[in-house]
Image (tube, rainbow, N blue to C red):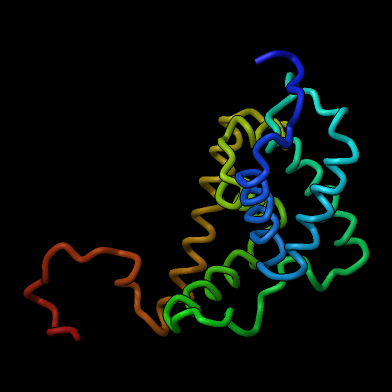
Length: 184
């Protein structure tokens, strides 16, 4: 790779998927996420000559743009940030819908920094090093912070799941214990 890549938008399908997934993690899937993704690519097209491959990958560059678009929108409309949809997407099975909504609700309870880490890692599928470039942290600091964020997320999910589904969904049972009553 040279210092400058001639076209940071050379593989738009993969980039679009990554940016949309990141944005959807941040504000929920749907028209708002599509609008932010579109605005991100509109700005990227406008400023593509300013891309410097020595400073990061195309996806990292685009995430930086998406973060600015999200920050601008958050200043204008606080309702769309970390919004949990009230209804499931059409065509989804009930269990998948409940799981998705439960996960979104749990992510929404995380701090802004934790949501950002989760969105960068699992929405945009960035590595710890790439996230570190975005947030100006070392890869080790990113891994530690992400581990802690996931621990908080898991604790929130287990708390939510304990009432309707029970904790067995999160802890595999290896063998039945003879001292406990037969379970369902």
